[in-house]
View: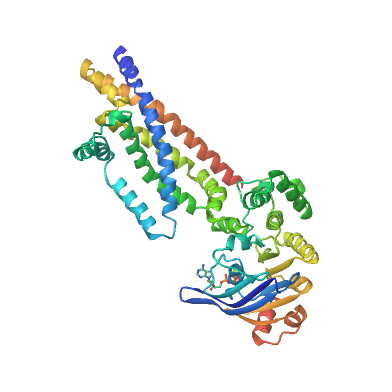
Length: 240
Length: 227
Ligand SMILES: Nc1ncnc2c1ncn2[C@@H]1O[C@H](COP(=O)(O)OP(=O)(O)OP(=O)(O)O)[C@@H](O)[C@H]1O
Ligand SMILES: [Mg+2]
C-alpha cells in the first residue's frame, strides 16, 4: 500500500482548471520532488493533498484511508506541512510553536510536549533558541523551526512548498541539510522545489508538471539528466 | 469659583454610574461583537444575513431612540400582553441602559473584530489547520490572540466613545454624570458651572484613556519598526 495515493485529482478555481487529472503514488520512505514552471499547479497539488484546497474531483488516500471533509483534522495530523513563508505563530515562542499542536490536538501533557519539542529543536540545531520569538530568528532558523513544528505531530508524511524560496542564498543550505537528514531517516516527503541540486541528490522520484498535467516522471537521472519531453528540456534549459 | 468646584463635585457623583454602565456594556459589546464577527465569516447565509441586519439596524438609528424603545417602549408592549413587567422590578433602569449600550457597541466592535481577524495572514490559519487543529481551535489559539493586539486601540477608542454616549441615558432614568449636573442646575440655576463641571468629569475619564491608547500605539509602531 502506498503512503499517498492520488487518483484523478482535478482542481478548478472558478473557470480556471489548474489540475487536469493527476495520478501519482508516493511510497513509504520515498522522496518525491515536484518541479515545473510558475503557475503549473505544483502548490495546488500539494495543498490538495492535505485539503488546504478542496479538490474539484478525484480521490486522495493517505496510508490507505480516503481523505474526506469529515476526517480531515485527523488526516492532517498525519501530514506535516512546511510553507514557503514559514508561517510560524508570531505570538508564541519557538517552544510554544512546537507544543501547541501536541498539547491541544493530541492532549499531550505540557511536559511531554516540551520534552519532545526540545528533542526536535536539537535535531534542527536550534535548542538554544527555544525561548526566543520567531521575529528574532533569521529566515533559515525560522524555517528550521517550522520543520520541527511539522514534526511535532509525528507525521507519516511531510509536505514542503518551496521551503527555501523565501530565504537569502546563504541560508538555503542549512534548511536543505535538515531536509536531507530527514530523508536519510526514512521520512516520506513531497517537495515542491526549484533546487535542482537537492532534487538530484535526495529525490527518489521527480515529476515535472506543466499546465496542470504531470508531463514527465522518473528517477532524478531520467527526468533531470536525460529528459524525454520537449517541455521538460525547455524548462530545464532555463533553470539549470 | 466655589460654584465651579461644587458643580464638578456634583458631576463626579455620577462617575460610578457612568463607569459601571460603560464597563458592563463594553464587555457585553466585545462578547456579542465577537459572535457577530464570527457569524459574518461562516458559510451559512442566514447567519451572515442576521449579523448584517443587526449591524445595519443598530448603526442606522440613534442610541437615544434605541434607549427609549428599550426602557419605555418594551415594558408597555409587554404590559399590553397582560404581563406585569417593569424594569424597576428587574434591577432598575440601569438594566435597559446597559443592554442598549452593549448592543450598540457590539455592532461597532463586530466590524473592528472582523477587520482585525482579516488582517491576520491566511498562512496562519493554514499552518494551524495543517497541525490538525479544527477551525474553531485555530481561531481560538492562533487567530484571535493575534487579532486582539491589532484591535486593542480601536477597542479602547470604542470605550471612550461609549463613556461619552452614556450621557443620553439620563433620558431613560439613569442618574449618571450629566443627569447629576442637570439636576443641580435646575435647583441652583448655576448653569455654566454645572455643565463645566460635567465636562471636566467626563474628561478625567476619557483623557487618561486616550493617552494610554496613544502610548500603546506608539509602542506597537516601534516594535513593528524593529521587527
Ligand atoms: N486560490 C486561488 N484562486 C484562484 N486561482 C488560484 C488560486 N490558487 C492558485 N491559483 C491559480 O492556479 C494556478 C496554479 O497555481 P499554483 O500556485 O499551484 O502554481 P505553482 O506551480 O505552485 O506556481 P509557483 O511556482 O509560482 O508557486 C495559477 O494560475 C494560479 O494563479
Ligand atoms: Mg507554488
